[in-house]
Structures are given as structure tokens and as C-alpha cells.
Amino acid sequence: MDFKRETAKLLAGASQNLAQGIASWSFEFWERKDFRLYLDFHKLSKSEQDRIFNELELSLLGLLVLHLDHAIEHASRPEQRIVFSGLQKDLPSAFLQLFINLGIEKQHIDLWKKLIYMRLKEYRRDFKTALKQSSKWEEFVEKEEVIHITWARIETITIDCLSHIRRGDVKDGDPLWKLLRKWFISLDAQLHPMTELALGE
Image 1: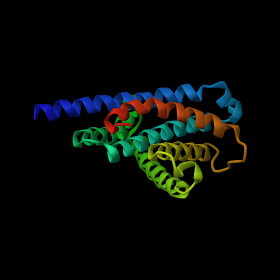
Image 2: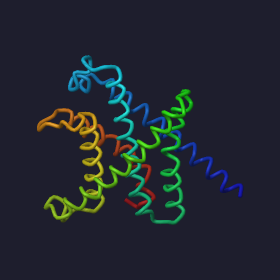
Image 3: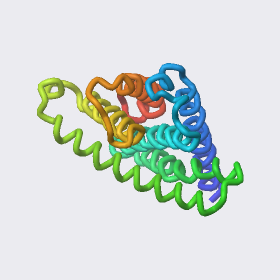
């Protein structure tokens, strides 16, 4: 019983650290001059600026959850699957706890909770679509499955994030697409060591 309690405590701590990381990484990116330049940031209302920051946080949360989906599915040992499942289960709650700690009203927390699960459903659906549509592409036919999965994960989050930031008005050649994609590639690479040993990659 003590072992289970200690494991749960460790997982909760790890989830809190990841949730804090989501907020910090999103804030750093949100403050970037090139990001703000591509948005005409100074012309946006305060509420629109805040909405865009929220989209960055949601997208990063989605990237983490999709990463953990892969880790759970491909874990080489049952105990690893338990750890990754625990992390994934605790992560949305740990993220919401950041708002609770800031004294945000319950009605807004409840809205955030609904939004998180709505977006996670969207990301998972779009990820499956990206995998299916690209499964016979020449670029992936002879490559390892993990490369294909990583590509689909990053493309899904990039496209969905851009679409939400632009409120669906996405134009060809939007420089924000490349900027977001580089950011998600960098963050996905930082997450990889967390799971690679367990997955034997």
C-alpha cells in the first residue's frame, strides 16, 4: 500500500512539473518577437492576446498527451505502461491546478476542463486521420513506424494550433506555420528521452 501511495505521489509530482513546463514554454513562445510580428500582436485586443496564449498551452498539452498515447501503446513492460498511463491521467488535472492556485473562479475552471477534453478528442481524431492518409506515402513506406508517428503527431498539433490561432482563416504560405512547427519539433525532441528507454527506441 505504501509503495502504491509513493508511486502515486511521484506521478503527481511529475505531472505538476510537466503542467508547469507547458505554461512556461508557452509563455516564452508567446513573448517571441517573430511570433508577435506574424500576428500583428500589438493590434489585437487583450482578450484575443490571452486567447492565443491559451491555444499555445492547449496545443502543448495535446502534444504531451499524444506522446504519452504512443508510450502507453508501445511500452515494453506492464509497469512502464502503468507509469505512462498515470502521467497521462494526472496531466489535465495538474494543468487545471495551475489555474486553481491562481485563484481562478470555479466556473472558469469548469470551462477549461470542457475545453481540454474537447481539444484532446480533436487532436486524437486528427492524428489518426494524418496517420491513415499518409500511411502509403513514399516518404514513410520504408521508414520506421516511430518516424511516421512522430511526423503525424507534430503535423497534427501544428495544423490544429495554427487553425485555432487564426480562427480557421489559414492562408497558404503563412510564416506562422513554419515557426510553430519548429517549436513543436523542438519540444517533441525534448520529450523523447522521457519515453525512449522504456520503448527501446
